[in-house]
Structures are given as structure tokens and as C-alpha cells.
Image (cartoon, rainbow, N blue to C red):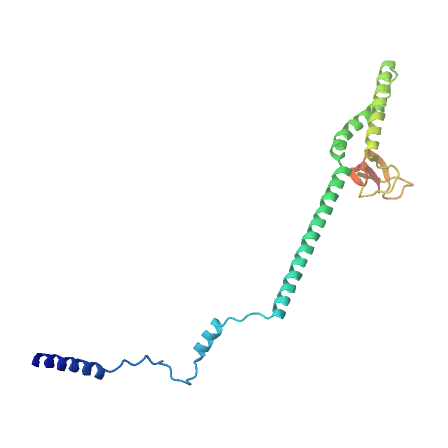
Length: 204
């Protein structure tokens, strides 16, 4: 009986201690209610704030992007057209003057044959050779003419520095200054381009 009473008394003491133990308070927000935020805190809130763009802003952005793309396409198209025109022009020029190098190589042959035809001789054998040269000379001239090569008319004409080159000057009575007195080497045009200027003697 006494032991049971003693046990009950011990349980009561423990219960009283539990009831008297203070209940832990909830953590209180360190910030006092109603306290204003600092500029740094406001800036941080602004950065973290996710604002959804309005429909007007989305449309304006799309229109701006579309205008930029249209401008890029137009510029690319213009560049392509310019390149096509440039390539076509280069191809046309190359085709137009394709005979230039061959013509330059043939002109010395034409010069030599022309000098051979000017040789005067009483020999029948030599005359036959000259006739053969003359036929070849005429054929060569036709080939050059078919390719657009034409002789520059210079003898007795006013000197033209664009198509002629003066090697000598000479005074001659009755002839005004600047007139071609003699063609020392024939000049030729290839269409509208100088293939070789004429070498001439000009009056003073």
C-alpha cells in the first residue's frame, strides 16, 4: 500500500514538471510589421518579378522581327541580282573580246606578209610566190574581219592620240600641223577596243 502510494506521488511530480516546462515560442519574423523595404530590397524584388508581356507588345515585337527579315531578304535578293548582272557582263565582255590574244599574235604575220607583197621583181618565179602570199594574206584579212578586227585609217588623217602613236614629226609645206604624213605600222581595232595603235609620222 505504501509502495503504491509512493509510486503515485512520483508520477504526479513528473507530470507537474511537464506542465510547468515552458512551451517553445514560434520563431518570430525578424522584420517588424509595417517596416519599409530598402532600395536594395525593392530592386531585388523588381528583378525577381516576372512580368508577362501584353498582347500588344507581342504583336509589336513580331512585326519588328518580320520587318527585319523582309529587309534581310530584300538585301540578299539585290546582292544576288547584282552578282548575276556582273557575271553576265564579264561573260559578255570575255565573249566579245575572245579573239584579242589571237589577233595580237596574228598581226605581226600580217605585217610581214604585207611587206613581202610590196617587193617588186621581174622574176616570174618570184611573182608566182607573191601571188600565193597575196591569197594567204587576203584569207587572213577575212579571218580578222570576221572576228571584228579592222584597220585604223590613219594616212592623211588628223592625228588621234587615242588610236595612234607618233614616232616622228616632220615639217612639210602645204600641210598643216598634226596631219599623219606616213603610216609606219598599221593599227587595228577589235570592235570598239584598240587592238594595236597605228605608228605614224606627223606633220609639225
